[in-house]
Length: 191
Image (tube, rainbow, N blue to C red; front, top):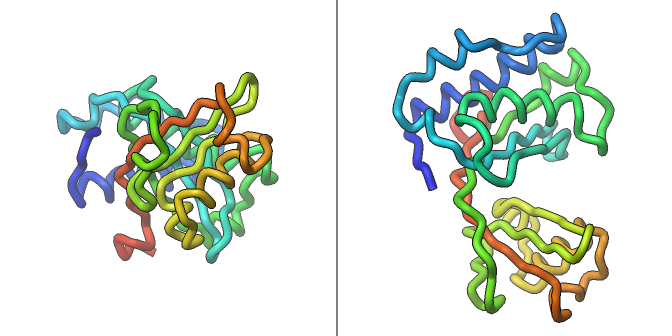
């Protein structure tokens, strides 16, 4: 998993906010010239990443790439736009909501198969449960926010996949885990 320092975290959060602001104003996204400004070697890495938006304590949007498809800045631009305007659970973000939202970014490690659920550590690991066309993902911070046990976390990941809560116990259901470096405007004192 890539690790970025505090200054790099702030830059990525500002990029996410600027992306959403620009899209609200002109329905355009930052271009290649913006991406080229991110010159640290770590920015050229490709990793999965999610952008989560919150208003108060409520989720307002969360979308990401599970694996590395684009460079870190390109991914943040894509996912900031998607979480604000394309999360099917919410209407597109309004200008009024823009002023109230906090942004959080989760940079993901590669996904690995879970052989035994005892390998899952609540607070460190995010989960993906899949069975056929059903798949659900919950980021590591979700279980911590709700105070869930490992079993409860598995159960809710199954629900997210549209499966019964105990589906994780069934043969053939795939459980995967990943870790993430999570940072946000609120935690860094930017909002």
